[in-house]
Image (cartoon, rainbow, N blue to C red; front, side, top):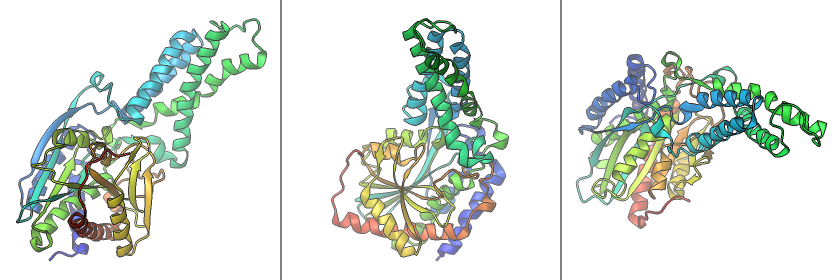
Length: 418
């Protein structure tokens, strides 16, 4: 029987192999697809089951990848602000609407206007010997992120500078509206407008120029400096596949009534596109998802930060309390300090699952504040902690046992997340 310590070494060797061969795996890139092909082959080798590969189309740069474009539009709006307020207000409002819809909420309303690429979802199904009455899905994402330039330079100021930029675009829209109301079509102070208000309207948008510029340089699309994605998220992929290997090697540990699905989902960094595609394809598919419990793995690196991610703040989602409590219990049983957090920015692959009404939780071992190794070229395999990987395996095995017990004593309910 392979021990958890040996399992951690297996996971690490897998991560090293993928990065050494493919490097960064930006969403929808040739590198991501090539890595997915190798992951599918590795998944079959480790689980003993030929995986299903499901391609999907999406727009890689229509969400987080569009942030520099928002900065460019903000600069254009700022220039127009000092020419005429109407076009400036239109550009600024459009910028803000796009940011809310595409970057914050991941709605995808404007995806059709961006170039489409292909990614893949890959999964293997391991069944117990009897009639299946519950499914445990271990999922993670295959892609890595563009370089967040401000994070690698000064992560402590990244969020502040980003907010500064968004406020700057809003200031342009508000300033333009005020100018229209008071009849200030040009730059001359109209009669009746006080000097202090005139100076505010004239100068505040200009003072926001550094913030708007920060949006322009928020990230770069250059592959050469993109994140290798060792932590985020080959640790999740490798650990999920190891769970399939564990039950292949230890069939006695898999109850006859349980199905294990190991899933490698694509394009998470582009707005959870792989998870969305998987749920659109399989939500309600009772031939595959029989009373499913989704345990999403995302970034297993920092030993002092074992987190049960209870929801995505930006997506207004709350994940399953039962799975959250199981994860907390597993942390305590493993002798690590448990943390419960809401994902502070962006989203994770549990959100599309939660929105379809299924039980899900995201397990992370990552410092939740901005760091210089999150979404930067410093996310390398040499920085991984073998003890964290080993504990993560122990925790997942514990959660698996708890799910079996919970399923035996409780009725499964499909209910939309709050």
